[in-house]
Amino acid sequence: MSEKVIGIMGGMGPEAGADLFLRITKATHAKRDEDHLHIIMDSNPKMPSRQDAILHGGESPVPAMIATAQNLVRAGADVIIIGANTAHYFYDDVAKAVPVPFLHIIDEAVRETARQVPGIRKVGVMATTAAMQAHVYEKSCDKFGIEVMEVPADTQARMQAAIFDHDYGFKYNGRTDKCIAEACAVAEELIANGAQALIMGCTEIPLILGETTFSVPLIDPNEIIANVAVAYAKGE
Image 1 (cartoon, rainbow, N blue to C red):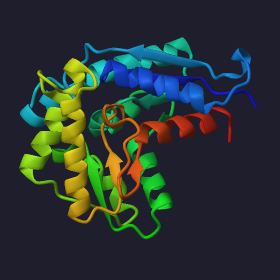
Image 2 (image 1 turned 45 degrees about the horizontal axis):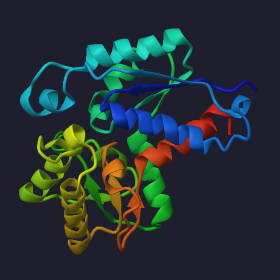
Image 3 (image 1 turned 180 degrees about the vertical axis):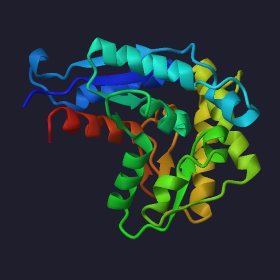
Image 4 (image 1 turned 90 degrees about the vertical axis):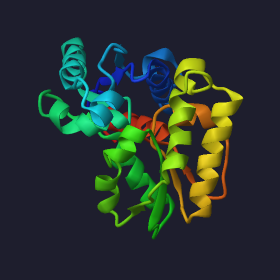
């Protein structure tokens, strides 16, 4: 059976897409160059803001997302990953317009959460404000009977700032002490309020937290989708 070619829709943001590419490469556990998978990435940071579209009714990113996915198909991709959690709000519109299957980072993250924490009933999701207001994790969690905890507005503002703040947020400054501290504070508050696991529901958050550990499992959708993509491409 021939291996599948993996396509990554990157640029949302660029470093997160590059991280996903690297994780797939590492998850392949190849002994030589020829054993690695064929990966194609279209890193398109020019797509309209998913935050603005969801929160403020701004320009829809769907046409640009479809165009990016179609670029990957023309380049030979057999399967596509949308390299951003928030962008999965538009998943159905994009997937139905493209003639190859997509791997769903949120579905896979929730499935792995249920596997790692048998019987879990309450999960804390650390994500952008747009992702939280659009309830992108609830649909997947509902399938497993898992409640997505409500995040207080001030706590969510701290999570959003850790990602987007112009002075210290990851997207504009990389990994700073302040964005790490804010993300950790959010995590600890969710745990204190009863979270049995934490899902890093934005592709930048694993980059912010790095090797940080907490008293409950920390679920990394980037790592999970990388492993799923390797298994899919190898027919496993």
